[in-house]
Length: 181
Image 1: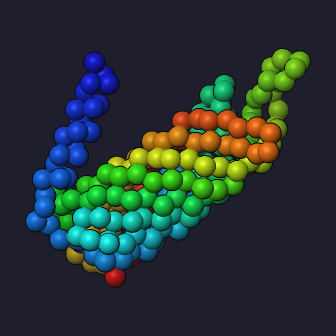
Image 2 (image 1 turned 180 degrees about the horizontal axis):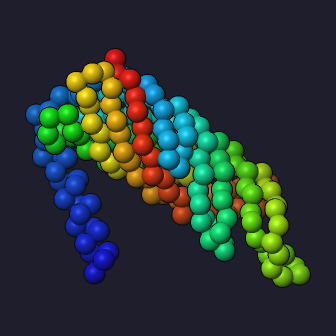
């Protein structure tokens, strides 16, 4: 039942965005930063009136992604996203789309398993990272040349090195502030 409600809400959000064909792009370019799961430099541009490309470069912390749900995954990544953006009301826009994550990862695990059983302690691993994500959220364009964006990015992450790989649920909840020009 909960999944059905979630799918209906996402579908209604997408249909609402698609139904706004007369709106113009709120700006051409914007530059700023993200805070939340990802602390990053952010750039966004509109290619057409509704199609935007956003690129974020920075560090990301994913909590609860380990096998024991008590680990942290730290990444330095490039996250380009391609999205459709539509106008709701004066200054308020909604968007939906997807992207990829490419980067370098280092983990600090609070607890881990080895051949002798369960142990507490720090253990670090360095890996490459590849991921795919969806992106959805809201953006508000103020009368001044400033936007405020709130987004959710559920996705799939894959950590790898020469002899090992591990996949996990990669997610992000971010707030962005950008200067528009």
